[in-house]
Every structure is written in structure tokens, then in C-alpha cells.
Amino acid sequence: MELGLHLPLMEFGEEGQSLARLSGAVDAARESGFAAVSANDHFRFQTPWLDGVTALAAVIDRVGLMELATTVANVALRGPVPLAKTLAGLDVLSDGRVIAGVGPGSSERDYDAVGVLFEERWERFDEAVAILRSLLRDEPPPETRRHYALPGSPLAPAPSRPGGVPVRIASWGSAAGLRRVARLGDGWLASAYNTTPDGFRAAKESLSEQLDARGKDPDRFPNALATMWTWISEDARDADRMLREVLAPMLRRDPDPLSDQLCVGPAAHCAELLSRYAEAGCDRVYLWPLGDEPRQVELAATTVLPAVEA
Image: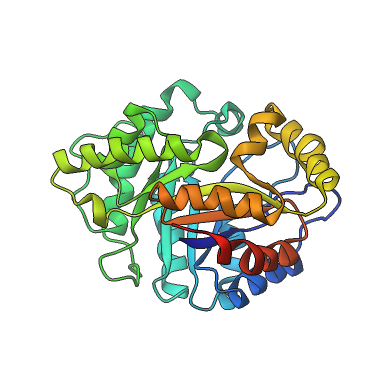
């Protein structure tokens, strides 16, 4: 199993947002042997939220050999042409290390912010992904379009990665979502706080059937688990405080189920959880520390990952 780092786009206390904070997190991930850094999309959120693709661009010169991933970018709202232009630029500047994770988003507030009906999200998403793939992977554009235009020429500059930027589709694991992953994607992106290791295993098995039916090799279809909220602490009261006073209110979730789903607690708990995901076939997990990013990255690399068993 590989570890990736989600960039610190939001505030959990009074950390503030700065290039120095991003840089410190990325430096720690690079020095700890992480495979990638990632960022996701919100236009409106209950706490200040730094724009994800801007954050990725800001740390290009610090990532080393790590990949840069969107986990996810809201292609239905950003628009496939502007998003393709941005991702192609990131890919050129990073020497071909971009992964485009995309989804329609689950927040109605984001749709309200740009004046798009939330009820149109799936129709818009399917069309937008088809156009995005045509631009990033030189595939035929959709035959019919309702919501988005197409440029009259290919992107210039084109992505640097051979074959173009891979497009991975986000799904929490529903039957319809997994069919969409198999139909539109080059990989699958799951959500840590919306699944469990058993749920991930079942979804992966279902996805394998969908891929087989489409003539795609399940063993060559990558996956990753995003938004694994993380606070590694041997102090039970400290971990419980982070779960109940910081994370659960922000997510508006019951803290008790979250405690079994996320890397919040002692290193042994986090290693056991990640081991179950590794056994379920998870390729990569993007950790999102709840603050103190360099220290949490170091703990993940030195006390958790060595104890993960596949």
C-alpha cells in the first residue's frame, strides 16, 4: 500500500492558510517517501477553504517525484475545458505526474454558488467527463452535448504524460456509481469516511465484474482511498477530543462510527485499519492530517506504515 498526503486546504483551529504551511506538509511527505499529494474542491464550506488546484500549482517545485492528484475536482462546475486546461498545465510543469480525480461533488452549496441546479449534477457530470477525456486523453468527444462547448482545436500545450492525464472517477460505492467508474474511468477513487474495509472490498468485487463486462482488466485498474482524516496520538483523550470536538461537528456525523473508519487514535489502530484496507485490495490511501501536518506525516511513515500488513 502507498500513502499520499492531502494538502491542508482548510483550518481545523487557528492554523491559518499559507504557502509555508503547504510547503511544510509537502516537504514532510516527500522526505517520508509518500507517493503523491492531492487536493479537492469546494467553492463554499463551513470553514475557510483554499482552492485545491491553486494549492497543487503552488507546490510543484517541492513534490520531487510524487504525483499530484485531484481527489476530487468538480468537473461539472469548473467546466471540462477550463479544468482540462488547468490540469494539462499542471502536468506540463510537473513533468507528467498529474492524476485527474473527478466527481460531481456532494454539496448543494457548491452548485448554488455558481447558479447550477444540483439536480442536474449527474447529467452534467457524464457530459463533462466525456469532454475532459477527449481533451486530456485525445479520445473522441461526445456525439451530443447539452451543457458544455468544445474548443475548435486540441489543448496546447498538451499534457506531458504519455497517453495523457489519467481520469479517475470518484464513487462512494453504489451500484450506479461503480458502473459509471467502469464506463468513464481509468481508475476508482473511494471516500474513507463514507465506507469501511468490508464495504471497500465488496465494492471492488462489484467493480471488477463491471470492468470484466467491458473488457477491462481489473488487475490493471488502479484505486485509491481519499479523505482519510488522520490524527495519530497515543493519548486517548487527545484523540477523542479531535474526533468529537473537531472532526465530527465539521462532518456533521456521529463520532462513534467515525472512530472505526478513520486513522484517529494510536498508531496500532491506524495500522490495523490500513491493513484491513490493504487486504481488501486498496492501492493507495490519501491521509488528511487534522493539523500539525509535518509531525503527523512523520508518525504515519515511521509508526503506522511499517506495521501495515497486506
